[in-house]
Image 1 (cartoon, rainbow, N blue to C red):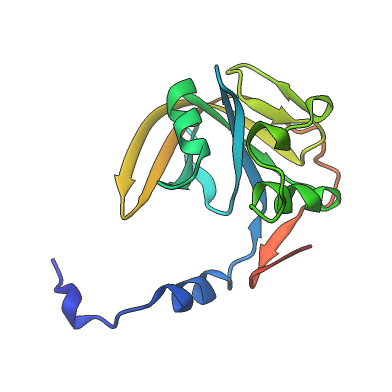
Image 2 (image 1 turned 90 degrees about the vertical axis):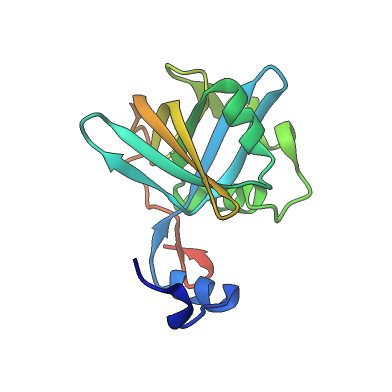
Length: 167
């Protein structure tokens, strides 16, 4: 084990600058419990393994949708197309719309788990929550893929790069 004190300390501003060097598909992670739907803009959603098909999402402990994910034991990852850039603002907290008001009933459906699925998303991945791991103010949610939709696969993706949304 190495002594962390001997390594340079990276502050949060420099950390996010370094993370901005990666292009990431913008995704809305969503869940629904008895209180209704909840979601957030996720920039850390990826696969863990193909066999079994496990996905992982990093969720800040302060994220309001975390309780809904834990209560419902499911979540979806909905990769946004460039024509859905307003959803990145809405679910990223840059809109006055909050909570269930961010879900337009005509735009959302469900697949297997009951998690909200965005119609027309580049891809929507429907997951049953298997495990959570809490570290450093975040929860890593591990979900087994139980369904998916690729209805919008021909669209252009919305990508986050260097702190900006674009393609």
